[in-house]
Image (cartoon, rainbow, N blue to C red; front, side, top):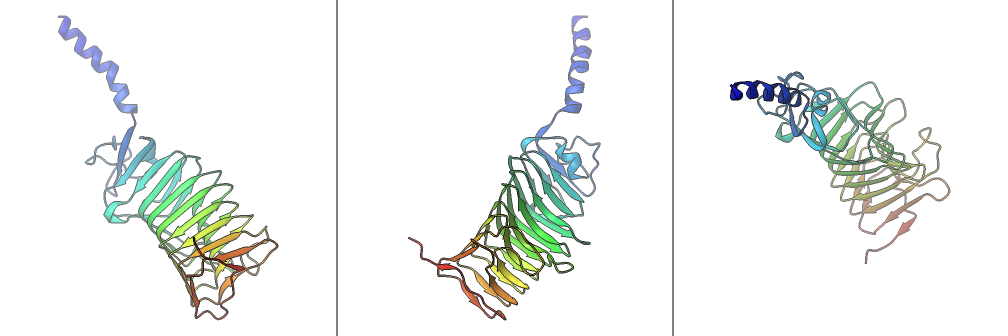
Length: 272
């Protein structure tokens, strides 16, 4: 009798815990359902919001297959990994002070706005991400955030005379091994932002690299851009330096050619 009474009691006590538990690893699939537990690969969620609600802080959301998964709103440290399928998402918004890693995704959009936005001291790392469409901006890093872009491809960030592939807005941005093409401004800084641009190609933009945008784009305090081993080519303006205190620092190993106006860095130095 004692055994028969104990087992049902244990089931009653543990069942709610199973239903509300979170996991360090959850799954998303185009054929999933947010009512699934999402912690088993065979029972994935359908949306990122569904999976994130079941993921522990610092955990990982893994995408099982390709598809369009809408937008992602991230409010805690987490890794979003699209795996080999490189699924589509409409946009990524990051508003957390913790480390957020987004890798192996295609971010597409239309109708303007922001595709990837990091705010309020976020620490965002983008790895092997393609950003495409007709947005106003590709990646905006703002308000003391830190953003790192490695093997990121950004194209067509321009609409109605405004837009930038990468914008450091009062923040620090590291761009490496990336390609930025067909944007209003390829890489820009405002409000004292800082960009370290390394081993990347900035091509076919109206302005390749700018300390404070160009034309009617920005009117805030300019920033600083440091360049190491990049190719800046086929832009209408290669380098654009404007504003008191603005600086483009070249380490002397950048290739700046084939632009309608190449422009010049404010300082050429060498590494030691």
